Length: 117
Image 1 (tube, helix red, strand yellow):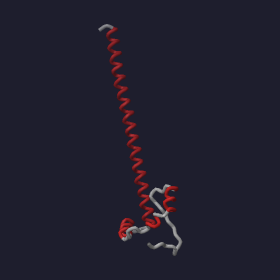
Image 2 (tube, rainbow, N blue to C red; image 1 turned 45 degrees about the vertical axis):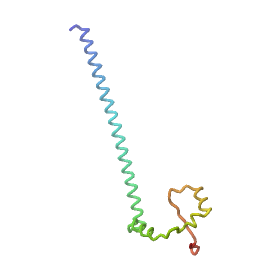
Image 3 (cartoon, rainbow, N blue to C red; image 1 turned 90 degrees about the vertical axis):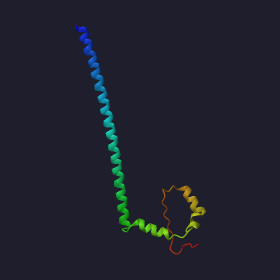
Image 4 (tube, rainbow, N blue to C red; image 1 turned 120 degrees about the vertical axis):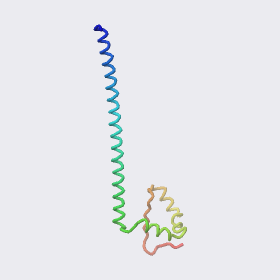
């Protein structure tokens, strides 16, 4: 084989090797990116689990009995339309428009001012 053919063959094999190395490198980069994504998801799940554990610990501290059982018991004794007089007042409706509560409403009233309907 003459030198020109040998050089051409070496050049082709070098290009093929470089192409293969580039492809392997890109696969490794993608694998690392996926691994980092998976780790971030695991960390997020662990954070959520930690927050849930803390929430449960606070509920347990506030009310050491089974909260769900107590809620179900109280809710089952609720009389239909209780409190609707309050929910239907213009002041309450206006207040809801002015503030954006995420599902929690704390109402405080003076003793002896209960409204019975």
